[in-house]
Image (cartoon, rainbow, N blue to C red; front, top):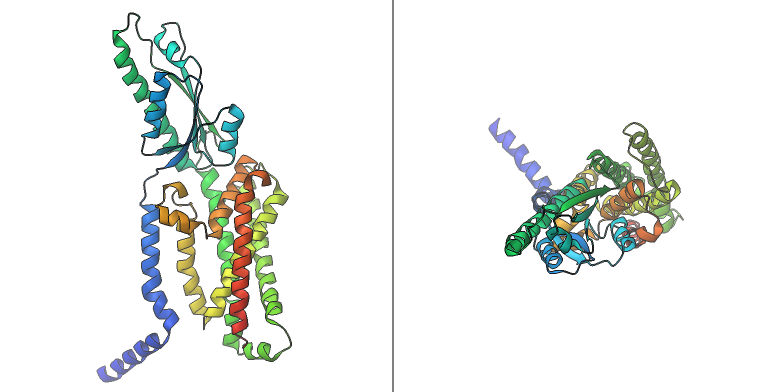
Length: 374
């Protein structure tokens, strides 16, 4: 009995050794997944882009700016010269927080009858980044003011109360986590549907034994690819429509932007992910292999998308790698349209990245599909 059992064990191990794709999945992909997810999820929120509009240009305002820039959570990236520029930076997601120092700030602080105030504007479309940026900015300003007052205590007139900080959270005033988490979850579910449906199309033909029939038919590779992609795109878009209705009507997430623009860019995103799914399908030998390959790929994409931790807080290498993830660009598009009412004038970098990725992935998928019919 033990001998027969051992023979079955050896047989299964030989099958695993011969199945190179499955072996790769069992050892390399889980390790890669663990490393990437751990590095992103374990990273503290930091390097958030900061904009400072200093209208005072005093010794105190320079101290405040330096204190803000020295805060680990913030990185001074912009020095706008108008309120319109401040709003533009927040609308485009280029700045996570903007600090506005009014003219006469230092004089008002040291004047008993003055009313020194600093306005802190926060992008609330990312709750974790917005909360961290607001707390860091307020702490830095208060610390700089306190230190300045300590050095000014020898002046003949008394120092007034500390500065009045006036925070304003845009797009999500209550920093409601649902406003960010649910649209992000919507994007990930659409991603899963698109890639899974596409990943089993070609390999299903191989398992059913009909792949050879397609190979000898007059249908060309591009026609097969298009015929396989269109149903997957249709299923994913129908899924998106249902989920969007649930998100807006059941969970009451605002839809402030253009619905046609969102649908168009969603179709572009789905096309890119269907191309990835077709590549997986052409490389797999069985449907089980295809699904197993999709699982770690989805986890890696989720880690790089900014859903678990802001992209700005990731290590430099992962930030660069995330540029090749369509999910990262689509999550930005989805949240900006729904919460910020963003239009193509601010979304064009993400839209262009999606278009480029869809084109490249489509060409690679076409090449891989063509190899199956050689």
